[in-house]
Length: 276
Ligand SMILES: NC(=O)c1ccc[n+]([C@@H]2O[C@H](COP(=O)([O-])OP(=O)(O)OC[C@H]3O[C@@H](n4cnc5c(N)ncnc54)[C@H](O)[C@@H]3O)[C@@H](O)[C@H]2O)c1
Image 1: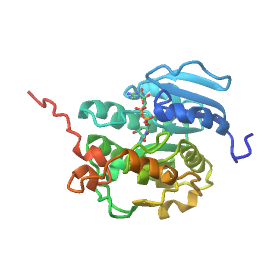
Image 2 (image 1 turned 120 degrees about the vertical axis):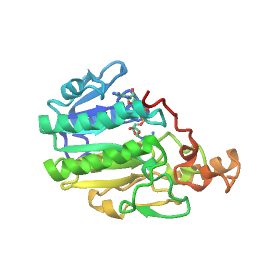
Image 3 (image 1 turned 90 degrees about the vertical axis):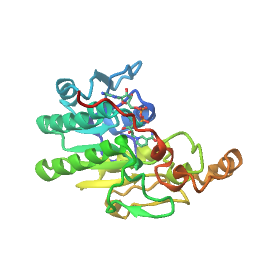
Image 4 (image 1 turned 180 degrees about the horizontal axis):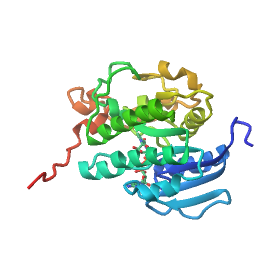
């Protein structure tokens, strides 16, 4: 057992394993369990000795059920991760999260880490500090689907006792790419620390936690998630000079510079033909 990890699960399911964060978490998360089951609609490449792969589309309950059976925890990253037409978001993120929780009930999974997003609160101002008790202010269909996932997981906790951490991930990339990300950045190692804290805390209940590193500038207060014991060890501060010298000053009249959701508040919401 890795010394940094307290509990080793038998089998953890990682959905969205082919995606950016799936690939970043994959090797790190294998330390948390005997067997890491990867799932996605895309290929995940060659498997390590303690990995297995179940191809599953979140919009298909039987496929998701096959991915969930035999697992004792789920890290749910799968789905559409940007703004998109509502019908696509509905299939992957809304129907998808419902299928995942129904499969968790069916197969007795009691703990889930759900990749929510800062776009649940994208319409708050960059100048204010919010916490998990502030009302959602989603900035588009994508953020709205994450609000649904947060509420759905709350209902499955109250009704069935399935504990969930809704991790409102800020910006998880190798390094912050712009000035907004100096506040929202979450390093891959801190993402793994946070997921590990959510998996291991003795009592998780239903918790909303903002996924960020120990950045000097922050808009989010994790006071409602102290019980999970997450201690970030990285910070965007070491990239501050680089970001300031490679990016221009924000136009404060620009909606993207004023709101926590950044460019997402300006993303065109694709209009679809409804009805006849
Ligand atoms: N990267 C970030 O900074 C960030 C910020 C906020 C939230 N998140 C959330 O974290 C999760 C992972 O983010 P990412 O950056 O790795 O996204 P990503 O788009 O790179 O990966 C998402 C994965 O989900 C899979 N997927 C899409 N539709 C699916 C379906 N119908 N069935 C099964 N799998 C499907 C894709 O194939 C992809 O591999 C997402 O849920 C995203 O909303 C990420």
